[in-house]
Amino acid sequence: MGRVRAISSGYTGGPGVSTFFFSVAVGDFDNVAAALAVDRVKAAYLAGKAMWPQTWTVSCDGIVDVIEPDSGDLVGTTTGTGWTMAGTGGEVSSGPAPVGLITRWTTSGYVNSRRVRGRTFHVPVIRQMFEDNGTVSTGGLTAANAFGGAMNSPGATDCIFGVWSRPVTADEATPGSPARAGSFWGCTGYGVPDKAVVLRSRRD
Image (tube, rainbow, N blue to C red; front, side, top):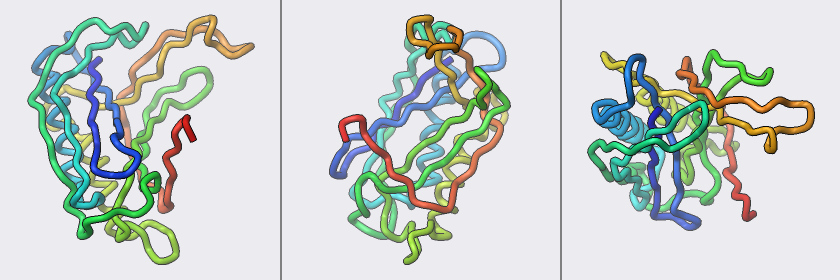
């Protein structure tokens, strides 16, 4: 399994980190898979860049951490081609820094009687991503869904985007819940709720 990180900056409260996980249908997660994963993240941000102000930037250094999904152990590093891009929204400034949109990821997985799902926050976004009543604008829904479609489109490759359910040791498990191995689940769909979301830090 490969882990790709994208770093956003150019706004109050930044930088921000978004993490994405990929796997391959057959074989090890090698440099070919790494290149595909890094390019997929780039394609998603290209598809959704109208959400972000022109002063906002996002970059990926191309480094892909190879992780054993069962244990969570870092077992190697490989690379793709790094990239940087800026937002292309019709405004220079954004709305409030922690307020934005979200793309939700669904899978067919169930772990500990819960569905395995993921989410990617898009913050901050330009004000045009919202209607006057606070709901998400048509442009906002289009951009966030375009992000989801590009991320979840493997094309002719076997590089699969998905959600990692992290391992839980006996010491970390809540009372009554067993320890469990981690597992990777390929994404089966995505969606964007028609409402604003707030990304909160543990420091808040």
